Length: 332
Image (cartoon, rainbow, N blue to C red; front, side, top):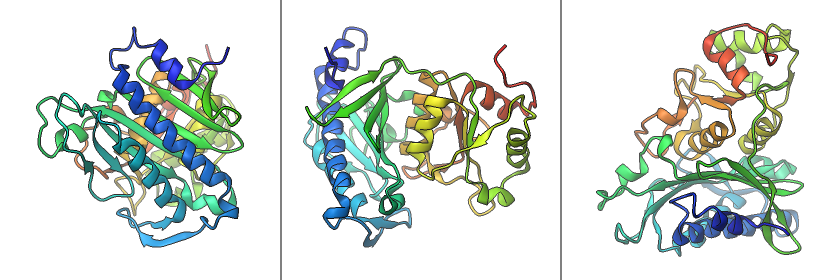
């Protein structure tokens, strides 16, 4: 028999204290919204939803029509869940908060509604990234303290990749599980339970066009990957869609790099709704994630749109990067 994502959560309720009925209902809001986004993407070329929306978001990025649709879908589906205290989106300057008591509105959801949306016009994979935080019992006012929690406090995190098939990957801190959308029944069905990132891989993923402005250690590290100095010859794979590049790294191993540059010394990717959820998933799958100086999940956020350098991948490749070692990357 098949197992849907809702059934999977329900089966884990005895082991996961956070997986209450409210929590399962909250996750169903995320899956409903992403199915709406998937349906819109699937017919995008036929329904005039490709191209720019004509406005710039808080990040200074040109909004795409599908950015706006995906954001509205998540806000609508999650806003109806009474367990949600606040929603934080990449597309909105400020959080959307709800006047719900601490006993009712227990969760904060942060999300990137459509990662890689600039690729949609050329039919490249895009995705949705989300993170669930528990509201602090003492936070009864503007919810900033609950929103700006370090990544290690996440209750759940996940992403959806919209591609040849639509795949949901999530963790609640008890392993990483993958589901594939079955269009015949309209449900995400369990296809990969207890996913593990390989201890080492054969691929690295980075935009090498920025190499001239990286700190030296990143240029040297990528040079070692290319030359075989880490014990194997690595190949480059870079899509330019964070979710797609991360998903490949999760399945195949290796390393994904988004180093600081001279123009963006603080990094480009957003901590709360890009780096933190993917770092949580990576660690649960046996990988590592760092900003180059320390663990991503240990960073105390200072703002909802804070950026960070982001390096994530298999244990061997990440240790070689962080330790500066040019050692044999083969398993011993």
